[in-house]
Image 1 (tube, rainbow, N blue to C red):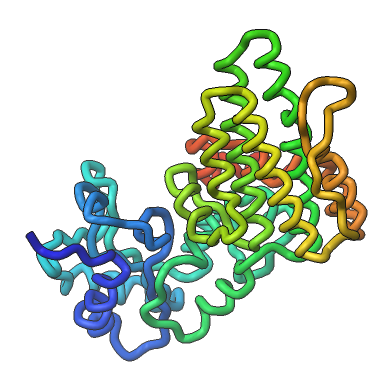
Image 2: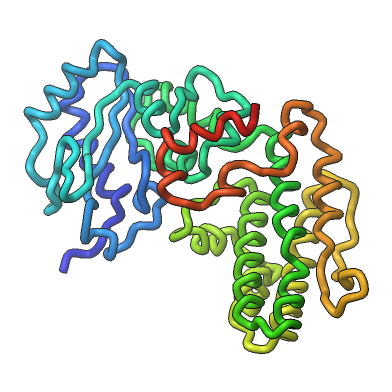
Length: 340
């Protein structure tokens, strides 16, 4: 069996040996862009069973699109390094291994707007992080400057948006942190475990936000979180919380995780230091972090009135997780009015 090579690695040769000669001597950009595990660098041998192979998006000027498309269509081999190559959309395999477009048209199709012409507040908040990763995460094989500029612009949220999103993520924890004990108290063991899992996911996403790292879609969230590195043991605490059989162990693991993520917040230095120690929830026998304290501290640093007016709804990833919404620009752009 041939040793596995990542799609990004395969694409280096595919671009140099096949695509570049067909494009010719013009300015262009090309890279592994868009949706998929291969764009994120998470593909493995398992990924090769469908829609996988040498894949590239080629971005040219508008007056070169048809010429380059025709040259690629005529000159593209049926396979490269043992993998089939398809030009155009195949409904059975759901792949398009070579895409030819202008930068603006490709961004419009992938993000729902042309980020090369500017990024408004609503654009930042309504665009899923996975879609942003589709622009900034993949390997670039050639670039005359057009792609680098937009990747730089989309590399991370503006500071005021980031601070607001941190507050919104802490708010998600504040909304449910007391429910782990309360559900257990009334005999709802399954409910207690479900709430625990939800809070674990929220802490993971908070850690990614704190690290200024976009969160990929659900399949790869744990992988992205693991790659942050956790010298403080946050990953172990969260794993213990989801694995715990006894409520007492579940709660202890969660409050350990809360204290660690609170210490990470303080290390950012974006607010005055906040006591990271767990505490009781009113007079109930529940230990929490009282995440509302972090919400208010973050919001107090948001001085941009347009951002502050958005309340605590969060960006689209913070209130929606349906793939049919988050992967479809026509669907998620319908939420633009939420932020206006």
